[in-house]
Every structure is written in structure tokens, then in C-alpha cells.
Length: 386
Image 1 (tube, rainbow, N blue to C red):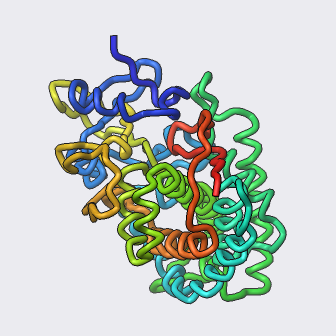
Image 2 (tube, rainbow, N blue to C red):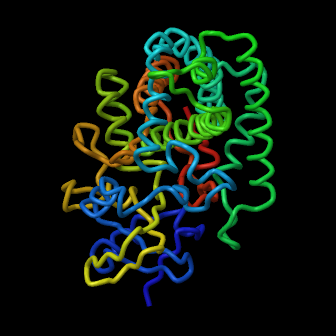
């Protein structure tokens, strides 16, 4: 009997054969272990993402949700509240002028890349992408310098889950509590002494007299830290993995840096770190002969939709010249990721500088160790030889 458990370490290790079976034979599948339906075809996932009235995010969007977060953040609300939050947060993003960060981002990337020059082996995550991500996050949000290691450690724990209990463990809950306490102190400092950073702008964002309240600023800041560390960090790890494993692709991108943008889009399609997000049905739905009921949870398997041959021919081939359109690497519908611009900008600059310093690198082999998460997929380490 076919089984698909999104909490299983086997799914973290290699979900794609299972996704293909789901798409071809069980496109609307009930997982008894996870107590959730899984939608695996591109068209169904896209339609669900657009139909927020049926597929609601208000009970949480992570497969394993953090306490007191559902219904209070951008990713866990539906319109009209979602529209209000998105408008205010987007207002702060626009005032921050993320393009203005590009010089700082390049300085960070160049410094880290140069430290790798001449090294025969290094960990692309520990020595480059994770350090880069947290430093960029600190620059953009306005977090205190020197907090990089603690912020990354807690943010990574927040998105993990226990594969045995299929829930957040005490260490994950404690990390979330630490992050909320940390963020509240930074917010209080920025309220007292505003600066040109995103936390200061979130605290003062105003549209027609409407502002984010204190809880909304806190949860938004906490979510941005979590998303910045894991979503950007996880994607950069997956992009690095693709280039380390596919030599022809890496050589093409190194030879012509203008290809990096297309390679980023193909990696978002081929190996997105944002694999699965959750919705809750607001009414009964019949799909592919299966009767789903109001109140049931539904897993939108973005990672599967991006490999759907019905949408992307030869979908299991990594092709930096593909120019994939309308992939699900940043989600879709009203809950499409707000940080797409800074993610693309940061990743492009980071790998431009890495390839100047280390143009030739490849994975050293051996087993991969994956982060235990029902929502995100990224390696914990990525040892490469240069």
C-alpha cells in the first residue's frame, strides 16, 4: 500500500519519486499518518493558492505550526485582514529601498567569498551561505551586530519538527519564545531610537491612519527573521547544491554571470526549499474522485508541482537555460512570498562573488544530512571540494 508522510525523514531525503507517484496515481491523497490531504499536481496547487476562501491559511501555513502564530501573521491570515497586513508591511519594504542594500550585500558576499579562496575544501553552508544570510538580515532589519550565531540557531530550530511526534518539540518552542523575546527588545529599542531599517519602518508604517499594533509588529518581525534565515538560507543552500552537483550548469554560469538569474529561477523550480505548506478547508471539496471535508487540513506540495511534467516538460532535468515561467518556488496566490526581490538580489550577488573567488567546486560525496522539517527542505551541511 502506498504511503506518503510529509513528516518522514525519508521524504526529506528524496521526495521526488514519491511526488511522481502522487501526481500520477494519487493526485488527491489522504495521509493517515499526517492526518492531511496532499495535492501534488501543479494546476491543483495553483488553484488552491488562488482560492483562499476555500483553502484558508488562518489556522496556520506551516505543516507543523508554532503556538499563537496562526491568524496573526501575513502568512496565516486571509483577506481582508491579510490585505491590510500586506499593505502595511509592503509600505515598510518600499520605504526601506531594498535596492539600496545592494552595496552592503556585495560587501558581505565579497568578504565571505574571499575567505574561501585557496581552500581545498569547505562547507558551502556553514562557511558561506548561512553567514551571508544572517549578515544580510541584520543589515536589512536593523538587528544588533554580533547576534548572528544565536539568531541563526534559533531561527533554524523554529522551522524544524520532530519526525516521530509530528509536532514541535520543547526545543522548537523554546527557540520561538527566545526569538519573540529577542525581537521585542529590538523593537522597543527602535521605537525609542528609530533608524533607517525595516524594524523601525514596520513600527511606524501608516496607511490612512492605520498602523500595525504591537503584537503585529512583533510577530511580523519574528516571522521575517525566521523566513530570512531559513527561506533565503535554505534556498541558497539548494542553489549551491545544484551548482555543485551539475558541473555543466556551474561552468556555464561561471563563464557567463548573466545566466545566474535564469539559474536561480530554475533552482526555485527544480529544488525549492519551500516544499510544502498547509491550508484548512472551509467547505467540502470533491477532487479527483476524493471527498475532502470542511475542517480537513490540506498540504500543498509546491515541490511536487514544480516537477509536474504537465506544466514543465522534462521536469526532472536541471536546465539553467529553461527560463521556467510561473513556478511555485515562492508560493502563489495572495500568499506569494513578499521577500522575492531581496531573495533574488541577495542570491545573485552572493554567487557572483563566490564564483569570482572559487569558480570550480563540486560536492565531495557521502550521505546528505537534511534538516528535519515538514515544510522546508535543505541540507544541514554541504561539503565541497574546490
